[in-house]
Image 1 (spheres, rainbow, N blue to C red):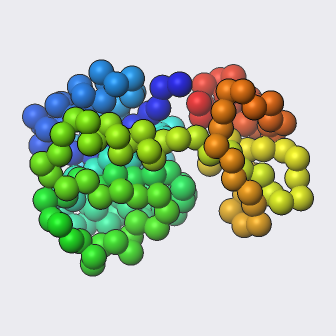
Image 2: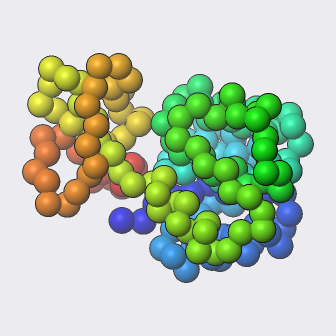
Length: 173
């Protein structure tokens, strides 16, 4: 399964190097140079992503807009924040949900390890249901009173029709 990553990095050489590294590890990368382009990809083009990576060195307005926009509609998409700082407590409140802070400089192995930890597929179902949901974009994605399970090819899960269709059309997996 190839995971789709949206990379927001304003430095051209860093953006290319990270995209190349991730491509070699079977991640599909869509790279942009600022938060406005990231928001445009997510909401206007309706680009599906499994994970967002962005540089904390983006202008503060870009960081805040991107984080708030992502979390307002995609609450559980994981985020990796690349940072030069050991502690960035003031901005941590923006990153509810799955997030990992990766301090620069980092190795390719550290970056790929962080991605692999965060993009593990979880499926959810409400406590009263037998129907599982795989995609956070599903209109019935449970956000309260649910159980979660790691997706495994060996499991026979009863999927919701929307998630099944999204998988067939390669929208979400």
